Image 1: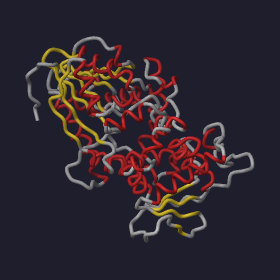
Image 2: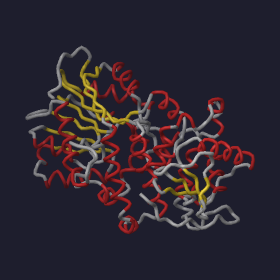
Image 3: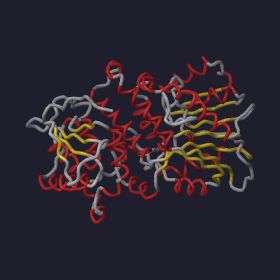
Length: 436
């Protein structure tokens, strides 16, 4: 993919990007405070790190510069620095948050954004020399206390992402409005295969949880209602909960249109507030928003809500345990701009927390390649519709932020820095098999 975005206007004497809305994006519009020494150190570290990677560096004047002795090979992604001084200053002040904000400001681009980010993700442990990793705290920010996923905090965090606009999500999702990884029959996937692949993913989860006629099902995280509809058409009685008012309102309309309103109840409710017992519980890519502090409460709720003989089916994004531990301590670009309060768990963390709550994992399947393809299809559809995004009230800075989010996520799965898994959990000691 080639980006055709012109370099941003130069930074003025005040250190402000005149093309970026200061009220909407204060930390993008204004360059951060950073000493000349800190910026110089950042530049030296970045240049040395990038010189060892299979990519090319170019400056905005169009003359390529490769900071390594060997000749670049065809197909290597290119990082074009329109404003190297601002790029290094942001990284010197804010690390990877600065890297992302620099992209939002238009200070760098790439002819292959996913390819570039995949290279960086694959070599994430090599970017900073080992002795300097202990100094991470000098530039890595702590997560804001306001982002903690308490009952009230979780509502605000969900609102900041999922209540952006139903119309925005409809621009790039398939007609089922399913905002999680699909499972395709074949890879690479074609755009017209996405809806069926999303239905296939949902059906796998429902099978994993044993959902059929008469099943009392709890869904934690409604989305826009597609899983609840498919469960209800199987004859299940569904309680689905969400913290997003916009999702709730649209899900109710879609459930009514599907003719299953009598079998589905949609409530604005936190998972910690649900009462009752259910034959099956399904939660799709919701644990990532819970936050490590509240994982014990999450798994305890799953166990408390599960009726004897019941099953839990969870779809979860995961990352390696050591990377999870490092990420948990810091405020990242994703947590600042996309998913406040969340943390992607490791499989080890899920196993430990679920066991502590009295749940055993009896099924585990990973499919990172399928999420990479899902994200590719979403991203390609999103970037083709800038005018439609603008018409919804979003600006160029938002479009660059959202494109980077989708590309960054896709790169995580292509490099296997991230994985996505479907898990089945049952009460400890329960002897039962999955139905597929």
